[in-house]
Image 1 (cartoon, rainbow, N blue to C red):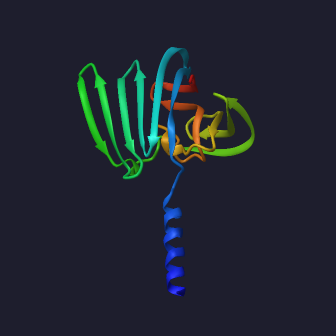
Image 2: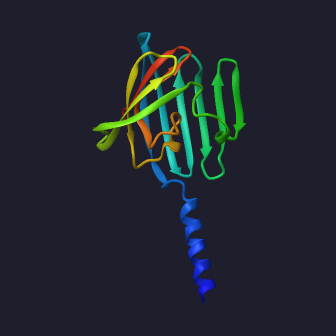
Image 3: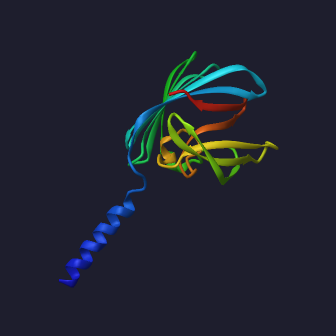
Length: 175
């Protein structure tokens, strides 16, 4: 009887430990504006999530449309690109790559604000090559793995800055 009880406890512990994140289903639309150097260049990003599947669609003026389809359970992804030179698909194992090609540090700080009717917590982020602190906001109850950037954060970033080769973009949610 002791062994049966021990086995059941072990199985239950393994099941709960295997749940890395709570499933999330929803849709977020982001607008991005280049702030460094400041101009009128705009991008938009749409995130669809249904449990362990995520589709991230980005519309950018310099690279065109790209779609990232991630399966969080098997940690595989496909990047679909549409450029003026044609359409391309790239299969990847997304856990082998950093969530960005830049170095950053973040610090949780007191503070929050309402974004899309939900409480978003505050972070201060510094990038290695940029001599400035940036204020980010994230949803603590939605795992960061559903996003397209900063997947090591304590939740899904919803108001953030993203450095690229073309400059720094400020992403804010629209709906």
